[in-house]
Length: 324
Image (cartoon, rainbow, N blue to C red; front, side, top):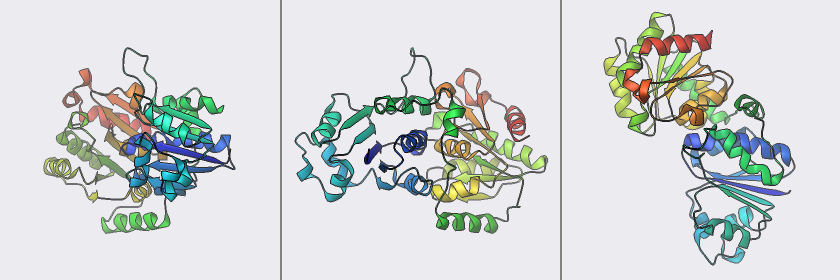
């Protein structure tokens, strides 16, 4: 194969869970040009990690033709034509209830077209880790993923980030006065309020880390300001706060940490994939499907899925066990 295009709309965690499939495609066709069309802020990480050779944001207008019934190669923009027309394989993890997306890709001349749902089925289907489920869609190309999540993680190259992001992470680290060792990152945000461990629990976890000689570091994205302020208000000694980092700079920052704790979120998936000792706290969502992928990941599910019932001491002991 000479040209493979992967389409993966979705949030940060959705895109990261596709990275092992990209690594498997690289192994299957090392000489192919692999183009990734996905969430914009994840693309520098995919490029720097050699998981893709080209990468384009999903929100560009070029991809509107995918949903045009009469689209032809001649009607595409130059960028879309290079990525889609006549590709050896196009894999799209995207909703396609009426088969229109697959039909358009076939009409554009792709030799192999794989269109699959972006997440594993809900009960009563048996639970399966999302990353494994996504990778199994590649069977039509003769790609067989390993049978367990850790083996799947091992198929990936080490995650890398652009040098500019490394410099930004270093500036933030120094500006916050963080020590060279013993920093524990805490991310209290998530895509939905129901998935968030209460801010006062994160504040208590930060206090426990500090009492044990570690330095807690609070992380906040653009949508996390309110919950981050609540954590700071409840902590006996407010931890330093790193906010608004690009995904690559966040990865560089996390890679320096001794441990990480967070909710069911994309940042937790990033920490796990980096190999950082990671504690992921789950409430209503199913960790059998959505727990982070990585070699040092522990999962705590709140009793009855009620996150308020999960005690900080339990979480701290689980994180310490991972770090030890």
